[in-house]
Image (cartoon, rainbow, N blue to C red; front, side):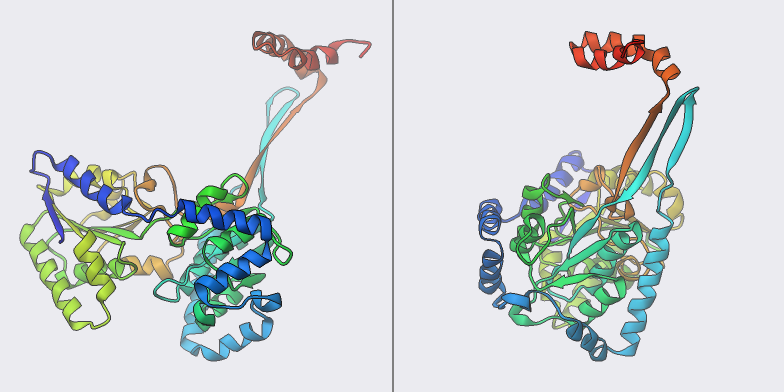
Length: 432
């Protein structure tokens, strides 16, 4: 049942947090199962990866069947329409252009006479990117994961994707080719994450793993963090749409359903200052669902996780949005830029009535891999920065070290670190 709450309710904040907790905490208890898979892959390598892939996906990936060959990739282009290939190329160009503008500069400056400080950026050497199969072939996720790594300068990029019963959408392989993937592995789930992290006889271990997946993939990334870097631990997709009554209810209903159709655990939230408008949106949602025979996922997701929030006025929106911290936020209102400046917690903000979230999913430019489950409070979407390391640069000459040695020695001795102090004092002795 869709939840309807009002800011005029005396316990509004606690109501909202309670509803959000129900949807966000409703996850399978998978950590123990995943731990066993990780340990098996660590000990048995390829044998374990083959076993779990055959068990879960019904696919034989023995020998060189574990990765897609060049002939399979080239044939995928013939299986896709020219229009689709053109659209993928266009999206890839726009995503590349956006992420190229994110590249940071190195820094070098003279802090004091004889002291040079700065930092340099270096790309991570090897990345493993996970692309889920899910209920649809999300070839857009290939572009959104791979291109930021490519722009950052990652030398080797691997993609792991499940191929249930040996099937894969040719568009997935086309996107991998266009984005510049070095090797595409036919494996998914926790066993794929383990193989990328630990390495096997056939798989070189990577330095970072990025990309969304199901609860098993998320658990595997969480448990392997520290052995490899990860981008984030992604949960079910979510959207919050802020709308006034000047919108077409059909548009807003479609935007909410566009998120709900991802997964039965996805969450769509409508915030509006007009209760009658919210009822019109609900009626339109029911109408659209009744007309679409393949909308079972969207229907279940909306009925189970949908929330409607009625505010007294739109000035209340920023604090509510920051409480929700949504993955996607649409501001379908008169002055979206003004409101957006007051909002701190959102993975991506879509400004205005003509910016549906789908534009960001496919072709706008920023990566659609975004923080979920309230983690936008402290994290950001995938970018080139996930694939870069910053190294500090520090240089003293003799005079500069001598000018600061007393402070360094005093601090080192106060911490009881004799050799720290000695490493400075010894350099000022003439016989050293």
